[in-house]
Length: 430
Image 1: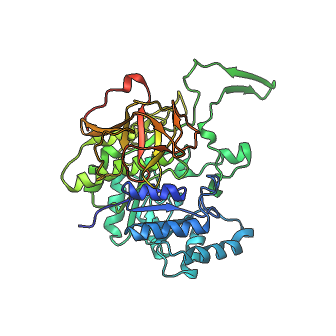
Image 2 (image 1 turned 30 degrees about the vertical axis):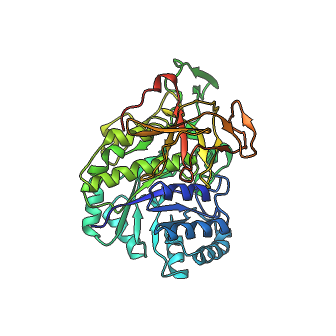
Image 3 (image 1 turned 90 degrees about the vertical axis):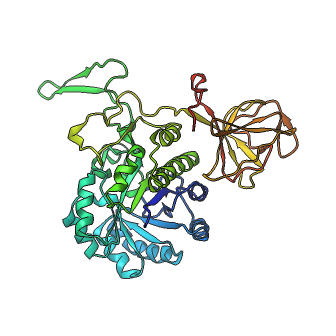
């Protein structure tokens, strides 16, 4: 049986490695030019992207290169050069958004698999067939598509791969086609520089064009302020339902601009959900426990399972972002022997170890600290905070660049976390 692919975001080389280590089968990212995430710190250099591809391929994983921006006429020659240069790096597919770029890629690199971006808004058999005839090997369907429509497309076009988003930020506009950022700041969303204007708080006014009078509409505090702010997509509770259709070839997590911890936890949670499905298990509480540890705008299952008119809980009206149940307190370096502090850390703080699935954590008790298990989870306490330069600290804070010694070696990029609030100190069993 061909298992569904878990596709994770890779906004940087570090996030690429983390997503793969924590369970992704494939990752997607790009070298800024013509990518929809130009603003995210320039993503990769060509050299870093090539290194990321080598890292993935060495582990039997795939990398899809994003060339999914909407180019202007003045950029077409540069686009052609970019396509050829990206092809030299040997990614496993290109992700493109427009018919013209799809056709151009097919002409320049005919052997490269081409994935059609969700920006193309494919929701039906007719559109899917048109793009397949043009050379698309996979359709990343519109976020607004229903599971029933996915089944119909697969029935008509069984050789065409279908990919769906299951987690991440949702756009106020239809499949990301929003121009609010362009209007307010000149940052064009479909060219990679969205300012996320839909997340801002807004005040409402009523104008009388005949008199020129402008009235401010008063609102109760915290109600109806974030009028364009969507909750985040979370379909971890529906993985069984999605996979049972047999129509989906890849499930995708949004979030190239999000944190390394986000890359790790989403990969781990959806890896568990997928593997459990093939083993006849469905432990929704376990997956959501991990995903609830992330910062989020509130969660919704959006449109794949339910149609938009059937529900009215997709907007987050009271806030633009809230803390998750946990706070990252440290991130283990690639050597596995030290960690960098990401939050205030004191001796004897209880830190939960968040490592890739299948990791074996040695249980120790030494002069540096202890590791131990409780309720199916693994923790550590540091008896002393010993830096790599041998200095002993009474406490360390985020921003302290001195690596701190661990009591035992941990897998690279393991995270250490604590409850975000004191009343979150009691963990449910794993």
